[in-house]
Structures are given as C-alpha cells and as structure tokens.
Image (cartoon, rainbow, N blue to C red; front, side):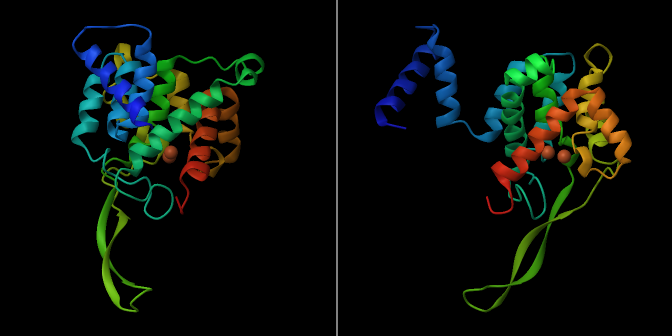
Amino acid sequence: MQPFTLLIVYLKGLAISSNMCYNNNIVQFIRLRKEVIMSPKEEFIAIYEENIKRPGADKLLEFLKKSDFFTAPSSTRFHGSYEGGLVQHSLNVYHCLKDYLSRPRTKELYRMDFSEESIAIVALLHDICKVNFYTTEMRNRKNEETGQWEKVPVYTINDTLPYGHGEKSVYIISGYLYGEGRLTRDEAFAIRWHMGFSGIEDKNTIGKALEMYPLAFALHVADMEATYFLEGSNK
Ligand SMILES: [Fe+2]
Ligand SMILES: [Fe+2]
C-alpha cells in the first residue's frame, strides 16, 4: 500500500468518525481498511456484526470473545496450526464461499441463492466445535541446526465436549440461536455436513445430504479450498 493511499484511508477514517462526510466512498474505505489494518479478529467481528442480526447473535458473539476461538489453531499439525489459525480459517472459508456462490453457474444453473446472513453463519461458525478443543504440551524435538534436543510447545487435542464435529458446531450454535433465531434447515445441514465425504459417516447419507442441501456442498467446497489452497501444512 502506497503512503498516499494510506493517507487517503486515514483522512477518510477521520472524516467518517467525525461525521464530516459520509458518501459512497465508505464501501471503498471499508475494503481498504480491511486490507490495511484489520486483524483477523476485527475482520471476523465486522463481518459477523454486519451480516448476522437474528436474535441470539449478540450473545453467541460474546461467547466467542470469552472463549479461545480467536486464539485457537485450526488443527494440531496441518492447516492453520498456529495461534489465531481458527479465526483465519473461518475467514478464508467465508471468502471462498462468497466467491463460489457468486459464480453465474451456481446461481443460474444450480439455483444456489442464499442470504448474506446464511453465508456468514455457516462459514464463520462451521468450526465453532474447535472452541476449547486444543491445548499445548511440551515435546522433545531435535534442533536441525544445532543437533541438540530441546523442549518445544506443540498443539494437542483435549476435547472438552466430545459431541462430534459438524454436529457439535450445530449443537453449540443452537444454544444461542434458538426460537425465532434458530438455524434454518439449509444452515443446519450445511454446518452438520461441511466435512463432506471426508467425514466418517455412511457415504450414502453424506451424498444424500449434499444433494438435498446445496449449501452443504458449497460450504464443503469452500472448506476444502481454504484448507488445501490457502492454508495447507506449509503455509
Ligand atoms: Fe471442520
Ligand atoms: Fe473448516
């Protein structure tokens, strides 16, 4: 980002915060702000609050803020195995899903037409099952440069609520989004089956669910795209 552009962003921010000016540039400003200074946590919260408005959403976000969601890794050794990996993965899935659903083919031929709220819910919250799921422990590892053995922290699993994976995410979300604000059938099935055929369930059941609920298929594709192409073990 060029210094001049940064200056523009800063001046626009000042103008907005002091109510001096509010025009169509706000959209451009928000986009630039995300690229320049937003942390993954800030971006997650911005997308969440902008799109998820149903009853219970505020309490669910409070739960996330108090939990380890924003510091947890996304896996122990593979994709996103670093502090903050889970929130970054959730954002990656959101952007992949938005992109997938913007294709003319998915809209016109497959008739995939989901609300911004549904897209945000399923993408941002599909892996909420990983809250309070990881811990660290010290392991001996050989330092390749010095040849010395040393103790290093590694992530391990300590599942404090062994309820499964997608089904656990639905269970946790449903503790906050219920009654009027409950998950729609499309949303619940998408989160439940987001692992697709890499899940351990009966393959016929998975296939049936993906066929009946296209948002589940789309979320699975976005989850894999984020995992293998944006993250991966070496990124
Ligand atoms: Fe997952
Ligand atoms: Fe995921």
